[in-house]
Length: 430
Ligand code: S3P
Image 1 (cartoon, rainbow, N blue to C red):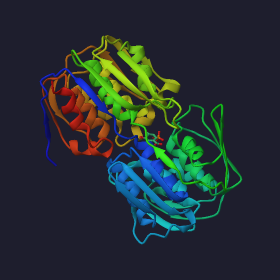
Image 2 (image 1 turned 135 degrees about the vertical axis):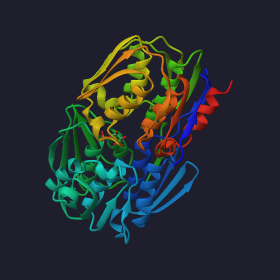
Image 3 (image 1 turned 180 degrees about the horizontal axis):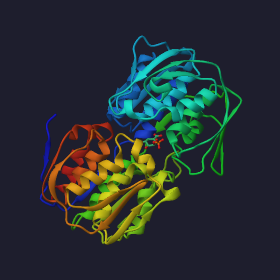
């Protein structure tokens, strides 16, 4: 893999981009389309590698999926018509594919084996396998089902009432998807609410899901009806340019189609609290997943504390928030974010190590990091650790460094944002 030289000569950013489809919603659109009988159409699908892994897995289960640009059509005879795959299902770098499919496959009649890349092989699966086992699932894998490759022998399932030990939409979703096939009403209790795309999409496909005070109840045996899904732009992708607009000089950029689901919009709250020069114009308030046009300009920022219930609302944005904090006046403290250690890489270590190489004043803590700003960043050779969000953090940092950033494995950015560098180009051309 060749290293990529990023020498942007401190551009000011101008112009408009339309943010590509949301990764979480794109995955789910294929999964739900494969469960429902009939033809589901999806617009604005994210053609990132993770979502293509999901498509590939469902094709191996015999589901017909046609991709035409960002329009995807899923034609299925329902979950009972899925075929036992002759091959291992390969989930690539995608935790969402691996964990949600564990839940989905647990209640089928099929035997399946799933594996992913070197990063997936290190990510914990027991957080999903354990509650699924309580429902009657038969799952095996390395270290008692903790790590891939995992094998699932589909079984009849019984609903559970489960209190979540960590805030994780992947765990919640896997349980709810298994609950679709289970006898009885599945209940998931969250002390901190994680992204609710599964609950929203279940409703879109005609199911009834009740949510009250962090308790999700979902009766098994419900039929899903094929429908049309409009995927919002991914706020986690938009976040890189929201930060870029705020920290570069004389910038003024407009991001269209930004998903503003309230369980995902923590980055907007953080930018507002730090004093960013930002405005939101809601585009589609009544959609299953609302969107807005967000305008951001160069900003004078101040350090803040980010903790508690805010963390699940911005968990994927913490690498780029750390870069943002290096440009803010004062101290930013990020707490209660230990989940970062089990993402595509250990993101506490990766962020702190890489930003330090640029001269940032940042230290790791057990559950987050502390950043003192503002600091002038200089060039350096950086590593992405094969993690798309660390790669994009490094590339956005290169917009403000005094000198060149050389980034290894920038290709990993295609996992969630294949047009990322095109968008950097568009916005940095005067
Ligand atoms: C996701 C949930 C989050 C997030 C991931 C996508 C999802 O993971 O980090 O990028 O689509 O449900 P956790 O459930 O592990 O918090």
